[in-house]
Image 1 (spheres, helix red, strand yellow):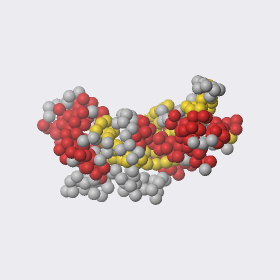
Image 2 (cartoon, rainbow, N blue to C red; image 1 turned 60 degrees about the vertical axis):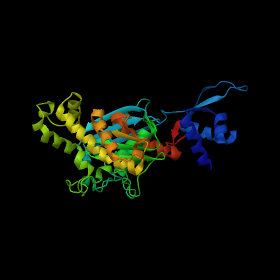
Image 3 (cartoon, one colour; image 1 turned 90 degrees about the vertical axis):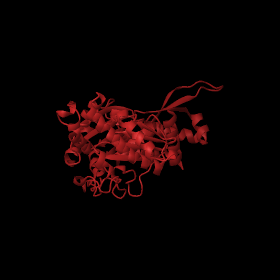
Length: 399
């Protein structure tokens, strides 16, 4: 009971940021003596402190308690197919530092893991305020996460990561909890907690090398029994289409993933006048930049991407009926060049009831969103199980 009351008190202070002991007693229904005892414990952890004297309501002026956002740190890691992002955040997931590097993640797991370990050490070493307390490390993976093997990526999707326990590896390196989840799930979690809409019924569509979706249903990430809920990129749009790395044919990823879009650029060069995509290496940034500059070829390919994605989104709306579909990934910088064809296709394929209240909008957290979602995964666990926070004894010495 004491542990549950402590959790209740900590979550209330985290949510409200500031409150007096009397307010906490009134809001929780606990006695003032119980509140005082729990607050004394929380102050010893460094998560709560007496901030100031509040205004009097007729009696003695109350002491206002404040949750300490900088009492500990969170690390979020995003493994993309070809890049890695790291964020260091406080306990409201405000980014204190962000790092990103190009890396062949799918094909070179050891290179990727070494960079992450070195990157986290650099983040923690450069943190202001001396040696920081690290709550834990969240990892966003370009793969479903099987709940039976929660530290590993699924080898069907990333075969070169077979048998590598990422959570164990990073846990040994840093001595703190490590949590993994699918990247689209964590994009959805970040948008739900910190994004513009914060809807409790949200689908996050990640458009990158592959295509994935994360689902927030009734305010919680829905992962399914085997961790593969939301794998919209591996829904078969054309059963006679090209083979996919997952073993199926005609998956959405094969029709609109990055490599397919680059193939379309090469195929359609003949029917468009000379433009910026005729020279130099192809990249998502180059494609989007050309589209925004008015290049006909780039706009043609972006419109194709939007229309094809719209098929998957229409099916998603009919199946799950979310309030929001948030589209993230590098391609979404194209804005309405991508989203308007997507919305048009959805209107032609989805049930009217499915789209009546469903907004389709770009992600609000930008390139850092998925890494922030990874940090949020750790915060979510720590607020549910406060013993996850680094524990101290009096005078601020660790136990």
